[in-house]
Image (cartoon, rainbow, N blue to C red):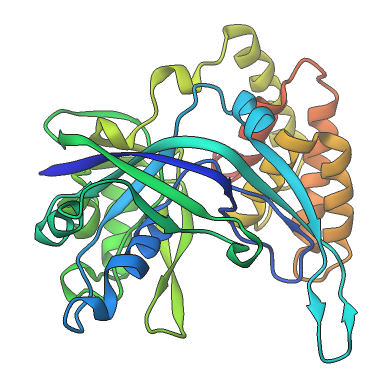
Length: 339
């Protein structure tokens, strides 16, 4: 099993989704399968291959050792107001984060279709992500060589991969496959055959969008970054990406124990947790509290916002907790609930 390795770069890029009816759109700090594969399919696949889509499977990540430092140096916020042209007015402003001057690595599974793309040689330019009409999303790939997936190790996943492919009969699945993954750590056929994942020890679930036609699509259950898997090294974080000193671990343990004792954790969606965690790390507790107050006024997110406001109060009682650790605690609440 071989993958073609490419360097990745973009000057302005928006990856991530806005909450339904929400005003804040955070960016993510990895390159998911759905984003990079969809962008390359749009450029090289679909009807350009005698009416049949090219078989492209890709994923990637940005180059950084410390996520907090990466956010400080490569993420900014833009405010814009979508305009309703029929009544000549602007609706409520949207606050969106965007990545700037980012570099990373992208891997394409080697097959005949990808070799055909590579035969064009030179730099590959394409568009990806949100607000492309505003000048965001121009990306570049440069071929660096072939990475043979020989040695696997157990560590944190550093990208986002779907469990299934809805449009491919070979890689579809169902409830039984999900149960085997959760209970036995057995990866789905898609994860194993395409990316060489041997075992899923801890799954951090989320959803990635997969188009099912030119105008429609569905969200597919996926593995997100932070999942503990046995997989080829290019899919995993390096040890320096996730170091935490002993003192910080001890304080985090105290915070988690207090949360378990004093907060009743009900339903929490993975997406809501991720967004709140990202806001907390990037903007700090004051902006996070404002965001949660706004969410508390909405029926569909009221209970979740109330829970996370209580959690935030506990985190703030420990000023030595850095934002990165606070974000980790927010994103671990489901695991805390199950202990």
